[in-house]
Length: 283
Picture 1 (tube, rainbow, N blue to C red):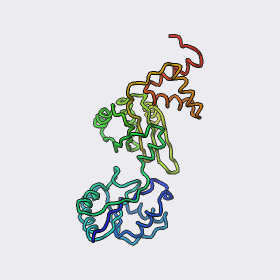
Picture 2: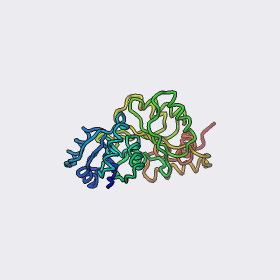
Picture 3: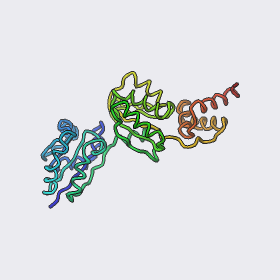
Picture 4: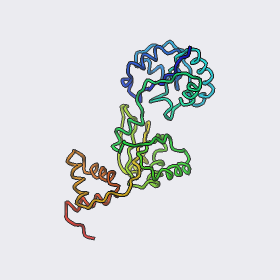
């Protein structure tokens, strides 16, 4: 008799985001492998769940050591629920090694899908989401971080990064150097929590804001590299901005949207709008 491994999507900040299936599995699982036992007990209290399964820690420093015991439990018929602190296990969190070990042992792996900071940040960023890539955490050391960003300078897909608050300003400055000061981005802070904040703007502008100090969990979304700039004259650019404003955008956001769509410098779009209001700009 073989058990099963269940990956549970934990809430990013709001317990109410958890559906009934995760409650059921928490209550019935034979083993709960969790990144932080204190968070498990807090979540269970918030959800009104009573669990009877054995609880084991499963975080980065003990991940490899825990594998044999968890695989033994799975192959003996146990249901093992893997919960990390927030979001889906394996996504920049412990989980991959256990998933791989379970598959190699012939154990079914399934999930109770839940929130993900990656897709949540993408959805609220205002940047293109039809194609994207997740790059996880940038390197901590400045030189390695700058090399990683330089390698992504031509990436056409929208990019998503996790970053710690105390390294955010440096990461944004390095990104502005690698991608260009005008590259559009969004800093998503404390997603779904009480103090949720989404800052949108050019990388250089966001770096200046972050230099004042930022707290909380950070997900950074950066627009991909543009292809050849769209060939629009000044009148067409001004009309495109006016259309965005007509749809309810502020002037600043309307210009930003046209910059993202066309790949043209912000100054070019701004000058086109100014010319449409005042007439041709003298050289």
